[in-house]
Length: 299
Image 1 (cartoon, rainbow, N blue to C red):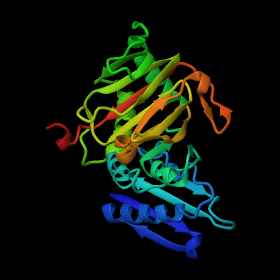
Image 2: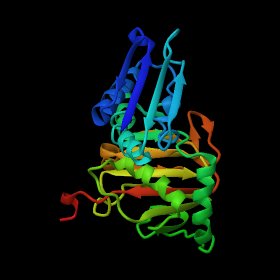
Image 3: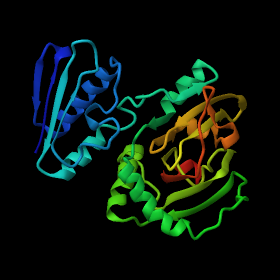
């Protein structure tokens, strides 16, 4: 049994109590999504937006940053942790919740900005420091034995080492599941192997489009150890591009038009600039989840 109870002063203190699991969560997230369009600051709203804080235990949250004199509280209760986990994720996909809790896009024109805002989503602070360290501890044991390479099979990366990983320890498996549930939902099959890409401080990723025969319409990457600037340019006209600030411990979701119609690259440390501000580059590890390729691309 799941109980959702919330109180919005913007609704003149109308109180809702819902015990229907599916219908209740759908209504709750629909209202939350609509309220977010009116917010000034949506950071960590109920721990739902960054999908990190309140899955596995009862959580009570309060946020006072909607409008002047507006206050809302929300309580989520579940007798079984998996019920909350599955239900929250089902109704809080990137499609249904606002992701722009900070301004991370610098595009050459408004139309381009709108495309990237829809199809290139960045969740700031998706990982905690503890989670980042846990992932690093597991991958470092293998990556430290590899040498950095300066020639890639499709000439896309310079100064890198990489591996694919299928099995993770229990704690990190939950992080990977969280990424896959957010990125792919229930109707898309994630690839079993997760790509671990280690870029040296002097390394960079050249403009490219991921091969469509190997993965589907959504790519999800966690950024560890260092922030960076990713540039997406229209494949048919590279003069139209947008720079995206990817802060350390963020998660980015590249989907649909951003995935198929734009090249993407990670700028070198000498050109790592976002809105005239230098973004210092250091060694950076990306942990990337992909989904199965679309049927039309495998024929």
